[in-house]
Figure 1 (cartoon, rainbow, N blue to C red):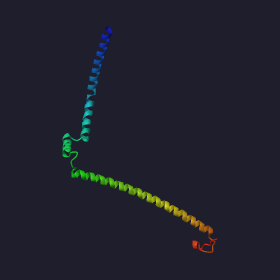
Figure 2 (figure 1 turned 45 degrees about the vertical axis):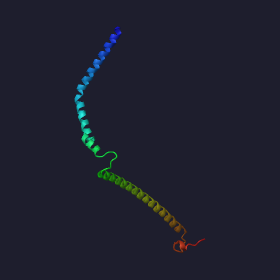
Figure 3 (figure 1 turned 60 degrees about the vertical axis):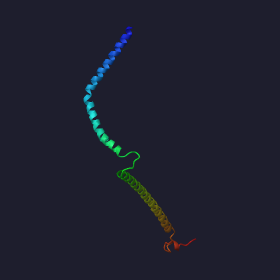
Figure 4 (figure 1 turned 180 degrees about the vertical axis):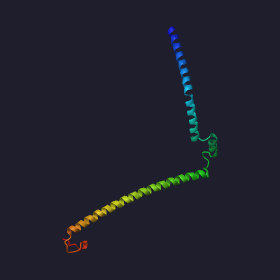
Length: 138
């Protein structure tokens, strides 16, 4: 029986000690908590709208009612902007590909021209001008 009383007294004293420590830390950190709450309220005011504004917004248009002209115009502006950005992106990609293809074509023509010129210089016999139609075919 004595050990039960000892256990009960120790649990009661531990609970008292924890409650006193919790009150002490609450008092020492009280100014920080107040400052944190004020900062949080400032952030909430920036993020969330007032309750009256929110209720007015929700009353203004139900889920199934028609959209206002301003809402339709705003959505159309967003769609047009997205289409414009998509068009610009594809145009830019097309221009890059065309430039790449043109460079490749120019390089190929340059290599071909150099090869033809080397062939002409190698096979020129000095008698006729170096044109293809003046060549002697063997």
